[in-house]
Amino acid sequence: MPKLRDIAQKVRSKNAGPFWLTIDIFCGTPEAYGQITSALSDTQVAATFGTSAQNIKRFELPDLNVVKISLPRPTVQGSIQDRDMHGASWAALLGEITL
Image (cartoon, rainbow, N blue to C red; front, side, top):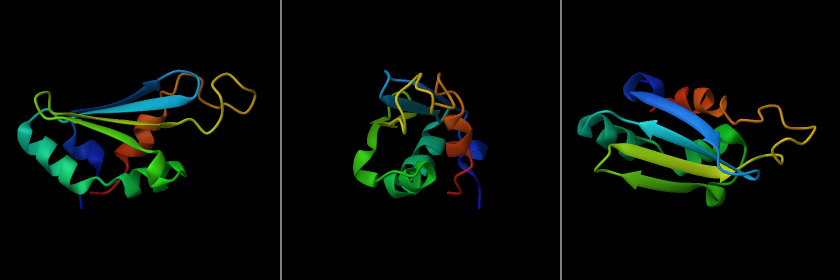
């Protein structure tokens, strides 16, 4: 089974303020977009990041072949417990999800 990173053109993550992270999945083609949106569940995303599926905010943008996922940061940005202040490493984790 393919991983998300093998189908998507690019997966990137970034801060969405001190309490939220946003992950953008650029699918590249309508076919890849359809495959990703039908196979990637909020439950999978939540399990990957150790949160509840109810905390996941998902935005599907078919005209752009993009899926945006936002979720609460596990710690406040910049706190002593924060291991990724810019939120950049979260994309790699999502890219490992098997679809």
